[in-house]
Figure 1 (cartoon, helix red, strand yellow):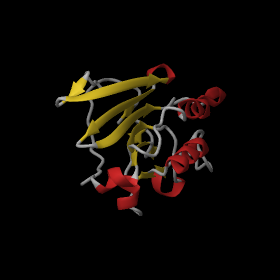
Figure 2 (cartoon, rainbow, N blue to C red; figure 1 turned 90 degrees about the vertical axis):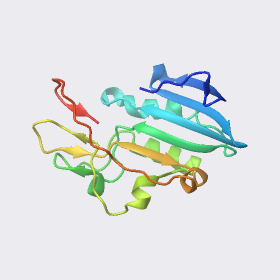
Figure 3 (cartoon, rainbow, N blue to C red; figure 1 turned 180 degrees about the vertical axis):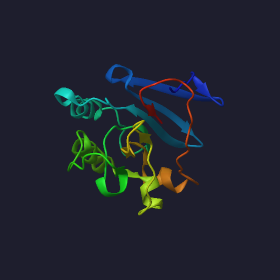
Length: 168
C-alpha cells in the first residue's frame, strides 16, 4: 500500500486514483523538476482478459513527456520467459504483456533493474509448495529518472502468516 499526504517534506503532492484503486499517480515538483510516480497492481487473474482490460484502462493515467516518470508495482505479467520465469508451463506471452509493452514504448520508459542486470535472474513471486517463480514486480522509469537513481534491487521479505501463497 502507498500512503501519501497533501505534502511530502513540504512539497505539495497531487494524488490521482484509477481503476478502482488498482492504479495511482502521484505528481510533485521538486527543485524545479516535475515528476510523476505511478503505482500499479494489475489483476492476478486473467479470466475474461481482466489484465488486458486493466492496462487499456490505465493507459490514460500517465503524464505527458514533460514530466519524469517512475512506474512501480505488481504488473502480474512476465516480460521475458527465459529470464523472468522458472518452472511451470512455458507459454509464449502472459496476458497483459503485449498491452504493457505498448504502453512502455509509447512512454519511453524501461525496466531499470533489467537494464542494469541484463542476464540476471531474480524472482519476485514464488508459488508455495511448487517450483514456479516469476518476476512480475518491477520498477520502470524514464531516462531522466533513471539518471538520478543510484540502485534498483529486489529484497526478499519473509511473511509469517498462513496464506496459500506469498506475493512479494
